[in-house]
Length: 368
Image 1 (cartoon, one colour):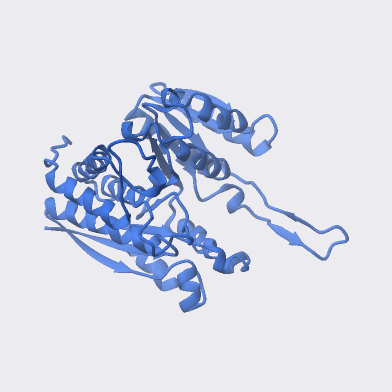
Image 2: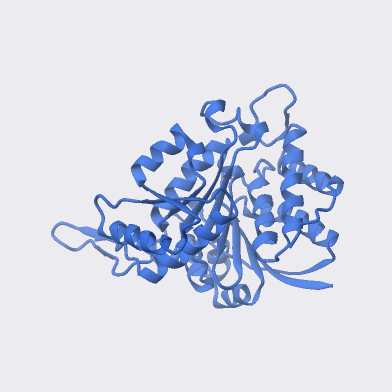
């Protein structure tokens, strides 16, 4: 029996609820394939600040580095909004990403047929949307130096630095092109090359990289145009490659194509353990009320199976189980529209329905 080490970081707000539910589905999927999990849980984010005085401890980071994968819930909330700099919960997430070296963030944006009417956009615009946003995750303006805030100056100011090295652009481009080769073979690189020097450098580097990948169709789009095109004609996109800041913004916009940000999973990949988390935040206003949508986290553990455990069969089974639960009409509040056949359920029942569907899903035989 093969064994994988998994670290869970429930974090804050609804994080513990969605991680607990998704973990049950992951354990069931692993059991079906004779896989043993060794799971350790650690405080992270605001919860770690309250108990340990820091958003992430060195011990937690070492445990994550020694694991095969890390499953994260959510971090932050109004309780910690008064904190600044390295004391904020979000700084722990940035440090975790940096130390794990997860430089490529995959954010699949898939519109399930059953939820095409749940989006604020017209059904005919979004039906069939299947986009993969590949966001550079450990460089750019979130990590660039210098970064300065001077409140003592005659006219106070602050600035951050958007910096990219060629190697950083090349390695994330390689991930995007590899993903595109398994999809429709199209990459749209998004930048702001008409204004920013860092974006012109990004574009030139991607163009040069693409010369050795003639099987992939490469196009370019300015980020403001991309933001418009995502809501005008999202089906034009296959793989979207972009920088840290632009990817953060565009993927949240794209989440609403699916009907709710509660539907969007993510996988952060590098050369070591992968980090898997839903795109949504900690939603402290509904924490502990059995209202959170767990499907983004459940879909994230499917990505975990695919990218960290090399269990494509289990990944497909989990994804089919999500589809089955939605086809049966089960909806959490964020995707409930009151249409005939829909049943409003809480976090726990949605997890139970996905687990029930998984039990009924035939084991997949994925060819190597």
